[in-house]
Every structure is written in structure tokens, then in C-alpha cells.
Image (cartoon, rainbow, N blue to C red; front, side):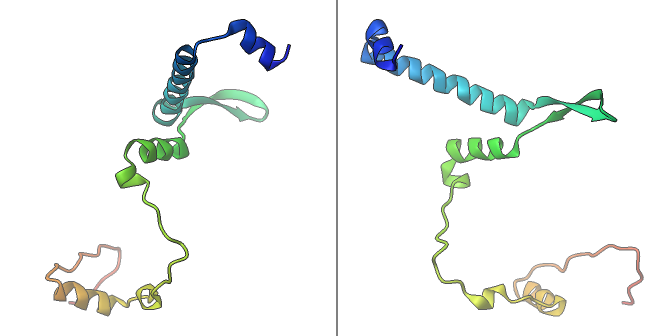
Length: 119
């Protein structure tokens, strides 16, 4: 049976068709949310034997949700054809960074490590 024949047989009203499409999209959004936030169980195998499950979350679906629901924050577009200021890509030395922080009135960061620093 062709899709045209099926549509003729069912013959939904435009409003009913739009409602059905909207409901389908709602279900898809619910599934995207479930996979991104609640996660899905993925089997874990060891030596060809299933030994358990892990909960897997989808960062890409979460990003998609954020971009669609908060576009002013997460869906910023960038003009990749715009010229790049090469000077802004320069690697700054630690001394330059500390001097700039002092110039801005920011406290220097406390760097912790397993080494001795003479003060």
C-alpha cells in the first residue's frame, strides 16, 4: 500500500495531523532527556561474558537540549571566517601573567605542589 493510499484511507484533518506530529516530537524530546539526564544501561563484558552494566549518559544530547532550550546562552554562533588577531594567541609567560593580574588588581594565584619554592 502506498503512503498516498494510506493517507486517503485515514484522511486526518490538518489539525489532527499537526497534533499527532507534535505528540511524536514530544515523545522524542522525552527520550532525548532520558538518555542525556537519566542515562541508559549499557552491558559490560569481560572475556566474552556479560559481567554487569554501567549507566551511560549522552553529553551530546545534553548539549543539544541546552542549545535548544537556552539558545541565548548555549547556541552562540561564531563567525569562523572572521580574521583572528594573532597577538591574542600569543603564549604568555608566567611573569607576564602575574604582572597583568597585578595591573588588574587581582591577587596572584596560590600554586600548590610537591615542590619547594623559595620566597
